[in-house]
Image 1: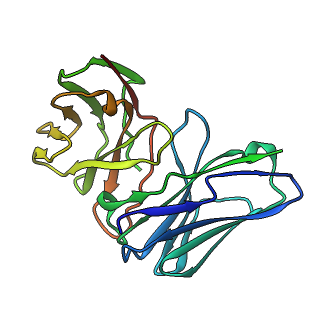
Image 2: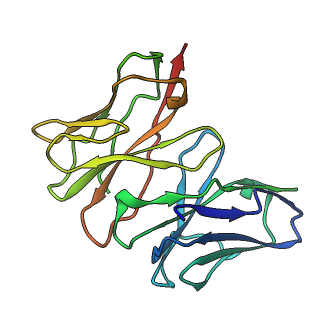
Length: 113
Length: 111
């Protein structure tokens, strides 16, 4: 299995809702990442997990809460989002410290209404 | 982090070679040069990487200038499926490396 699977593919949520994005990989990668991508912009790094521990939080607002329950799963919990948080959320995985081996999922297209 | 500069957009004809440039004048001796591309409606995918020597793989070639201040991604025969945004990324060669994307070059391929 050489894929990163993200669910759901599309999500519409209200500003008072709580939702979660899910990411799964079975490549034995021990580093997992969340990126945010606005339209016509490059992906922006949000969080890095290494060996299931949060190692980087790029000053992301607390309404985004990551979780790595095991080495294959990465979640992003969303609460009280704003319309400007609407974006494509990309998950990636790699061997730790191996920038040539990132595998990205196809992303979750999030719309906040 | 060292910066990269790429043209915003480029056009190519199908089945012709494409040379995508990247300037990185502040590159350090331990920075690897990585190229990723993002096809429409997909996540980025790895293309190629190198440190000092030119590199070839099944997708592309990477030509690195002798002073390492610039590099060129070469697609030998562009196809319509190569239309994508191509990102040139510098990354510290070590355990601290994380991919930080710049603006990239949007490549259009005409039939």
